[in-house]
Image (cartoon, rainbow, N blue to C red; front, side, top):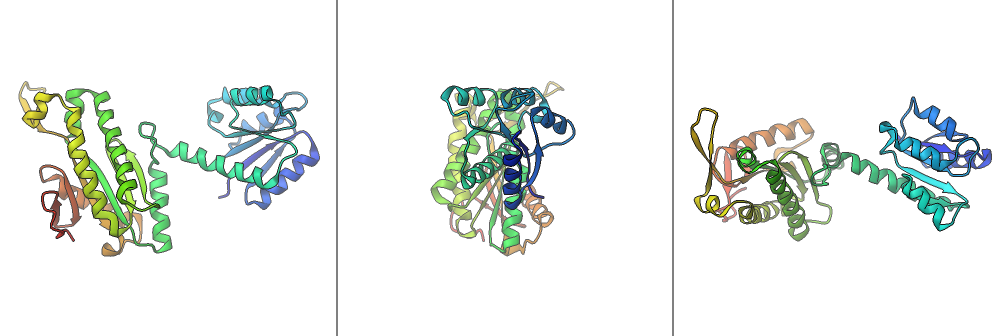
Length: 320
C-alpha cells in the first residue's frame, strides 16, 4: 500500500494542488482545512507523514504540532512545516516544537516530493531499527532478503549468534552484556565495510542475534573477518583473571559452581543458490539447522553445510 499523507492547509487552492501533486507521486493524500480538523481526523486515522501549514485560522501549525507530539500515537509521525514565514526565529520555533523539516512557500514541487520521500524513508528505518545498536530490525531484514529472492539475485545469508552469552550477562550484568552486543554490531559493520560489497546489509534480529546479507563471493571472508575480530576484542570485556582462566565460574541455585566458557560466536552461512532458497520459511529452517550444529561445538564456528562445520582453525578453504 502507498504511504498516507495528511495535508493541512487553509488555502483551498494550495490544498488542492498539494493533494493532487502527492496523488500523482503515488501517495494517498487526505486534505484538512486547518489544525482543528486535522486533529479530529487524527483521532481515528494514522498517517506516514503530515504536511502542516503554519498560519491558519482557529489553530496555527505550531500549536497543532505541539498537541500532536503530546499524543503518544503521533509522537513519531514525521511533520513538515510548509509556510510563508521564513525568518530564522520561525524556523527555530517550528523545529523546536516537534517539526522534522521546514519548507518555505513558494515551494519547488520536486524538492518537496524529495523531502517527503526522504523523511518517510528515514522514519520507517527509525521505527524498524533496534534501539540498542541502531541497526535495521526484523521488518527490514525480511524486506531485504525478499527483495533479493524476488530479483533472483544470488546472495549469502549470515546468521550470527553469540554462545554462552546468558552466562556472561548473569556474571557481569546486563549492562556489560549490552556492551558485548554493541561490540558485535560494530565489528559486523566495520568488517562488511572492509571486505564486503557496497550493497551488503547488516541487521539486528534482537538480543544477541544479527544478520549479514552479502554476495556469495565475499561471504566466507566476511564471516572469517568477523570471527577473528570478535574472538580478539571480546576479551577486553572480561576481567584479567577470567580471561586468563578461559571461563567464568557461576554458582547456580543449588549452590553448585558451574564453569562457562568465554563468549564465542556461531555464524550459520547459507548461500541461496546452493540450497535453492525461494522463500523465507526455507531459509529460516536451514539457518536453524546449521546454527544448532554449530552450537554443539566449542568456540567460534562458521557453519556452511548441514553436516559439517568450518572451524576457524581450519583455514584451508575446504568449507564448501
